[in-house]
Length: 228
Image (cartoon, rainbow, N blue to C red; front, side, top):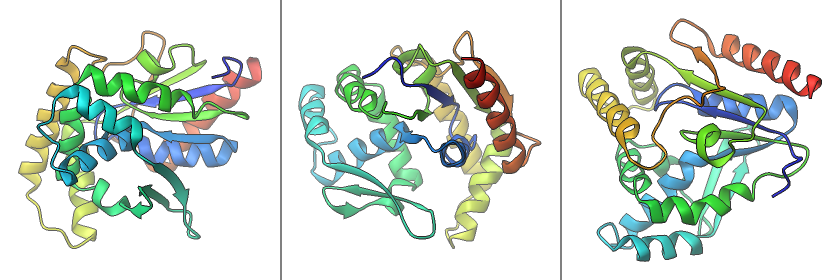
């Protein structure tokens, strides 16, 4: 990992829109993209598919190191994620897979196994890293750290609309409870808890459009890296 390669981290809770913003910012800057949340979802999904969800942490970590993962973009500009040559993009975005990811993300052994994988994405000309502990734990030397948030109510509404548009029926109240539970679990975990880095720029997107947020982060990026 080259410390000279610039990194922009975008952290935040589930449903804050950090994945969408990270993809847009990376594309605008022409930088590489790391969706760290997908890595944990991939481990959780692989463990469930292989009947290893209850396996000892050391075995799960060994499995994680051996996964063959590829991040691709289709002809329409949408993200595609391959696990052992199989497209699992749709499976990764389900609520169930989110719960599987949250369960494995609390294990220090898994975080250690994936840390080197995440560092490997740091290549010229730069990296936009999206997750929950990118600025606090994985890339603490990043020049620009963004913490993107929104109210739990707003995040539940966004997720409800996404699922409804896909023809998936789910209770808004249940989604809101699930988001609040995940927020609490992620913020209270002993290893790399979810919180803004001390030098992060916090952006509340509750009343902002995707374009508004993208524009703001790009302005910050251009100020930061032009100065650097």
